[in-house]
Amino acid sequence: MIRDIQDKILELKKEYDICILAHSYQAAEIVEIADITGDSYKLSVEAAKVQNKNILMCGVHFMAETAKMLSPEKRVFLANGDAGCPMAEQMEPEMIRGIKMDEPDRKVVCYINTTAALKAECDVCVTSSSAVKIVKNMDADKILFIPDCNLGTFVADACPDKDIMLLKGGCPVHNAITVEEVEEARAAHPNAKFLVHPECKPAVTKLADYAGSTADIMRYAAESDAREFIIGTEISIKEHLQYKFPEKRFYDLSKRLICPNMKLTTLMDVYGSCKAIGGDSSFDVTEINMSDELIAKAKGCIDEMIRLSV
Ligand code: 13P
Ligand code: SF4
Image (cartoon, rainbow, N blue to C red; front, side):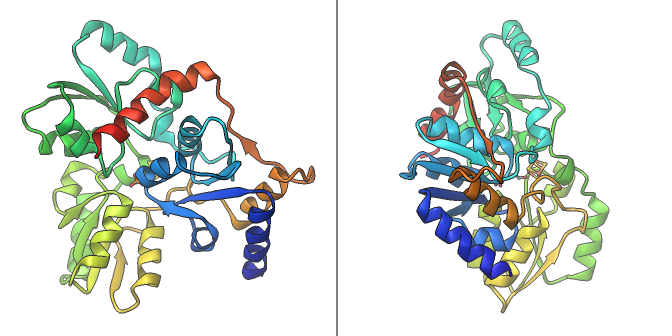
């Protein structure tokens, strides 16, 4: 059954000129039929190069919005319109405008997990894989880093010469992980390397052998000589790694590392979206529409991200 749906999606993709982008937190059956998979950084860089008329994002809303900003002439769709990232909605543009009024010489760096309206207030956008490099490369010493204070602390520790102001925001899934859970996983798997996403609390991230984005974690596990790994990010990454490297052993840091939003998208959503893009009115799809003005304002910080990360 899954194979049949996948085959249909592959046909529909060709017929309607659709490029499917899938974040690595998506289920294996979706990752398998995607044209491009990866972390937020890779998805945004690749979205700008897509040649197809239509882009279908399997991920969360801000990822589809970013793809639209980078390819405004394309039609961009989100495979499950209810999939949002709670972190992206945590701060209002007015609050950032207020801080900028008080401290005009402070540059605003936003994590890519933000709405376009918030990006429009910011100078540079970063992803977890590019944040340290970009902040180091910035020609500014005073920075406001939003919204994730855990990632912000990770960046501040790596850039001690910068004055980095943080606000209280973050990922409810990664932030919930405790030091006790790390100790339990370490005790259960004493020979395993512990790899973590910097959206976890600093006390958790500090205990890791390696901290990085979803793609960085996957690269580290692929290249390492170690045989066992505790994976401190959304559980789908452990599953993808275990499938790709059956000779190695991967363990969940915590069974609570499940992003309910990333899990909303099903293979049937992808199928239904492709049918709707092709004009079949029995199916619905969420199209991303943004005004030219908002795209122009918000895209600047993504262009800056790409410029500063090379
Ligand atoms: P990555 O940039 O590592 O893909 O992170 C996206 C995300 O939402 C992590 O929770
Ligand atoms: Fe957002 Fe956290 Fe889910 Fe990533 S894991 S999409 S940051 S809620």
